[in-house]
Image: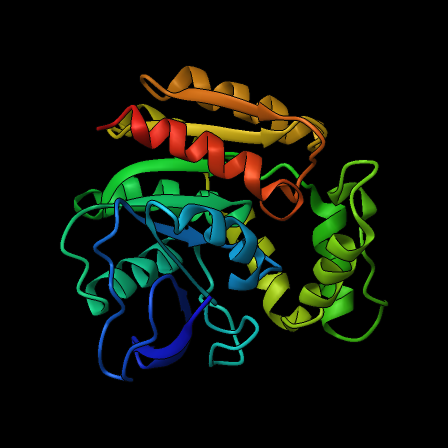
Length: 269
C-alpha cells in the first residue's frame, strides 16, 4: 500500500492508504466506494491490514495507521486509554478531510476503539466491522503481570501460536512474529491496562450504526462468547464466522474477510 506521514495531535503518524501517492500536505484520494478505517490490535500495526486492504481497494478506500508508539509512528508511549485512541482516530479522519462518515474496521483492541468511536464520535461512523474483539477485557491478570515483567526486562517476550489456526502458512506466522517485535513492550503493557479499564458492555445498546461482527472459528473461546453477547446487544448486528482462521483473521484469511465486508457493505447501499 502507498504510505505517508501525517501530523496528528502533534505526533508523526504513519499512514497506509489506497490509490496513488500524494504530496506531504495532501490527503490521499478517498473517493472510491466506502472509506474503511482499519484499526490494529494492541501489539500490532497498520501492516497487519496490507493483504486485506489490497482486496478491499478494488471497490473501496481503505486506510490504516500506526497508533502512537507503535511501529513507525512517533512517540515512545501509547495513548493510555481506549477513549484517547478513539479521539486520535477521529483526528486522523479530520486531518485527512474525510468528507463523509466512514466504516470503522477494528481488530482486537482496534475493535474496542471502534466501539468507542461509534459511541463518542458517532458523526464520523457509518458502520462498524468488529473483528476478533470483545466489549470487555477477557485476558486476565496473569497476562497483564507477565507483560509488565516483559516491559521492565524481567521476562522474555513470548509468541502465542494460538493466535493462528492450525495449518496457517508459515510465512504468515513469521510476518506476524516480526510485526510483534516492532512495538515496544512498554507500549503494549499500557494497552492491556487500557483494555482492562474500559468496558463497552453496558453501552452496546447505544450503537446506532450497522454492525458486522467477524471472527475466526478458532479464536479464543472468551472472544467467541463475547461476540455472541455483542450480537445480542447491538440492534440489527450481523455475524460472520470464517473458517481456517483464529485470532489473526485479517492476516490469516484476508480474502474471506474482504468478501464478508464487501457483502455487508453492499447491503448498506
